Image 1 (cartoon, helix red, strand yellow):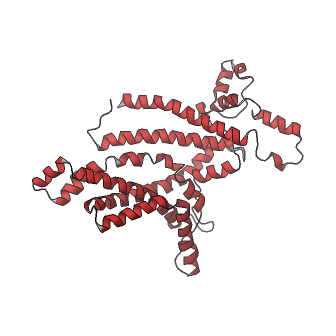
Image 2 (image 1 turned 120 degrees about the vertical axis):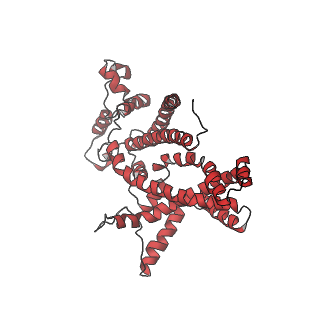
Length: 344
């Protein structure tokens, strides 16, 4: 297992470099040498703007900027080889040193902004994953046991709707119903945005009220995906020899299905759940924007519109690390759930 993990980590290095390079090039070709906020000061002269961009390193070749962002420029400067990049390192970044740089909007460290929003995103995504798994497993099992029946067809229709209905539309419909309509009818209503109420909020009940709708919308997507997966896996498992043997020996149907068959059927589901780790950033972005949930996804959306490329680069790198970690964690958990799996 140790050797397998080591090989996976080594293979992850070029993947992370590739993701950061592509994102850096996209941001460069989109924003170029644009610096947010400079146009707000009418007293700045073109020479002043040029000097600011020079201080930020935005007048240098794009490849040199990328190496500076990685922190290679600072490393070369420390060993006396800074001239290889055409000058000193002048950007306060260094991913290889754990420094994600500073925001071009407010000057705060990017890593600090990400870590401040991370608990909210974890709260939303973890709640949705738990809800999705808690509902999708019994739904998938029932569909497999009632395969071809009306109940199975109804559950299949709901699963298909989960893929067909856009998350933003479902979120808006829930806001319209449970926030706007219920409030107009003087019924108990749910807040439509934020994580807490601005006045007198912050308690457990208040956070739960804000969490319900975004978590349900995100869990509905997980339910649609995972329930069909559990159904297919369960149907295949119930036709295997060890299930027929258990039944022939007089084992009760409940024990055969829910102890022996289900354990083997849901083992591959661990892989899907582990792959949702990157959803801490990407999967919840739409939900966070619709419901104004103060997480990493909303931060990335806002800063992208403001051309704050240092923050966007930091969040993208953070997401890439989560993708690699999620894949590795899923494989390791799969080996734990199914003892037959061995990694050399």
